[in-house]
Length: 596
Image (cartoon, rainbow, N blue to C red):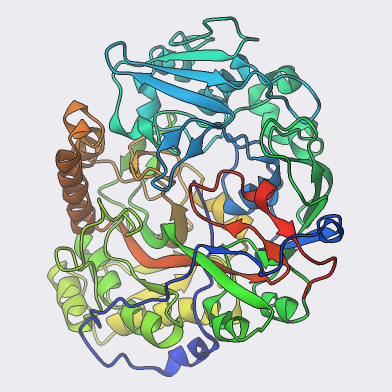
């Protein structure tokens, strides 16, 4: 899962409060900027350059949380700042995110036996010199499925592993379906499933874990306390190309090569990663403080100025996620299963749809976003072109205030005695609280535009705390099982490199923070990975049915699809965001000791 506030709008957004949307139709073009996935300087890397420091910016308006364990990470910032260490990645992938041989481990699926055999490289070691073992492959499953953990990455899809359900419910101390053919200290881990699924061929699927955790290093820490342990927070170890040299909590991490790394040896001797606010990143590039930024979080309002910098080139990819709106329709019970409440404030589908039709996302993207983002139409982003339903088939919620008001009235939300805002169908006052994250002044203005439009619709909508929230506070509140502070929230999710959305919208998914749970939703999610879906045409059909269903329910609705982009200084060589570039950090080089 990836949480990220996308600061997408231009400074011109400050005038949004005075804008009157001029059309009831979507612009229909959805045109946006297309980026190259790679950049390499014209001059090759040099010894002097590689012995200097690579400076990387993490663009964010809050400190990073400091969760180094990949199984417990719940936001993009932590993934970014610890990524030189490899983030525990097990497998290599091709350009389509399909798992291929050559990584820390190889994968072999056996359809007849319903098993997955994971075989580690014999020379794989952690940055403290300890051997990477089969137990390290198994332990992530224990962590994410442990009933006392707060891991966000568990979904009921993992119950397809034999013995997983009993372990997850606390009825067993081990997962019986995961075995070690040559012992827990060996190189082979064998996972027994009730059935294999099409998703298992791809990294980032919901059925398996594609990371390792250092069991020998953390085994004495109770799983329930792992996230706060010294081994995770202060002195983590890694199996990737770099090891952590120093970190300033929430602010920076610095890295040096990991001499035990099994793969391509890194060229650059020092890496420094610093958190930079979204308002300051353009000035930081102009001052040549950073070689590049992680390609999440750069406000697209700054694209024209960054594009004009002579010593930088832009690189980017379509994002695997999107920003979205969620409407709180229930709560999570003690077992973590979402329960829809028919008496919830946002229970009415017409109320939810009215709020979506009343905001002009096409206008915002076209006029203010510099072509970086565009309005979303389904909950599967177009980067997964095989599965994404076209705008022609599923237009989503283009701006239509007249339709919004009609839907609201039909649902019984009307004004009483000349009041400014509508009341509930039972005549009681309706106040809706909107939760969103703080960002640039432009991002705040955009969220204020949403309030403006909802007020025009006749709804009394207020910010949850009177203003956009700090990121960590936002998610801390939103993740409460029975939170009532946010009736509507604006968040961001990454689908991962395999588009099955069960871990976000399944009945017991921790990320299902609007608490959608219907028989039809569960049925369609399950059918995405049943035996019939090994037939690609059938699987695509099920995805399209699910996208249509989600638009109909409107408990969640996409806001913007995004391009993830950054600027790369012209002293950098070997920069590539291709999914098939499995040695991102090791392939980077520098042709000068100073930024150009």
